[in-house]
Image (cartoon, rainbow, N blue to C red; front, side):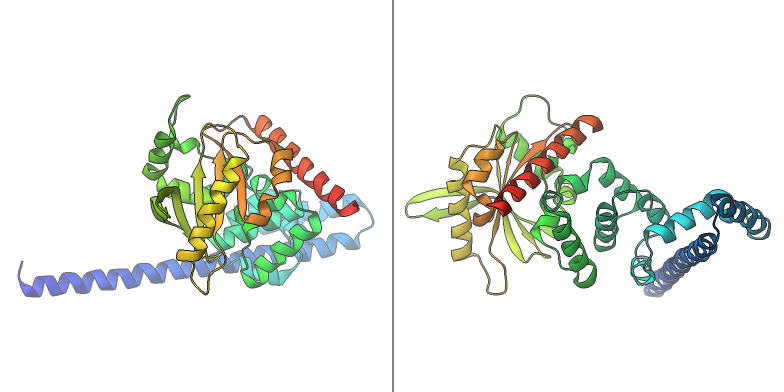
Length: 346
């Protein structure tokens, strides 16, 4: 291949890249405009319906309008889709929020989100979609795995949840409560009933991309079996990560069995060593995650692990049926919130 051919190929590749980027930008712009249009249609129809005193009046308007719009503009304005637009305007009443979200979220994203009944849950998924740029497939997978119910945030009072989601929306301010989960779903590791701690660690590194997705936004892998030399003894952190959003190191300790109180002291040692030798001036203090197969709630409460920057979470190598996972998570949320109410009343 001569020099002219190479230059022509490079030129072609560059022009091709420009064309494809322009097409992508146009598609994104069209999607954003359509999403806002659907919201505006939903709001206008909703305002008209609210003028009526009878429920039949609203249904008559929707049916009649849908028939006319579909004849003029096609199936995108069918009765069913007009109902989606109405719901969109109902559950996202603030145009400024819709305008901000439409830059990253497609109409398909919104069609999934608008039928979540819990407003806090809906706002959480919308903002995490925006922040992490989830595809619709990823959004559905996060819903199926009950991500919101697995976050530390879901255990907080509704008022605090609202404050944190507002901070995320207005300032892109991500807190540990939004990222930390319990349990972590590690069904992608493909582990059988019996395995060693090293098998678990090896499987995580083989599936590091999926593991990072489960950890959440901003995590990057730093080291495996990070060696700490203290006096004449060697200690090893199973997995060390850094989170760009939180600006902190995150040490992960893997345990095969249930949590034991002595694990706290071990993790505290790791975190203090990291603070002394690895911590940068512009970073927040290191965070520790102890992953185990089970834990006792009162034990965790008495150890006051949050004050030490330690999060204890279970991990599941097999995703249980949704009903079982839902019952488990709702019980954990109830226990946590009852504890907060008891603490507040004392």
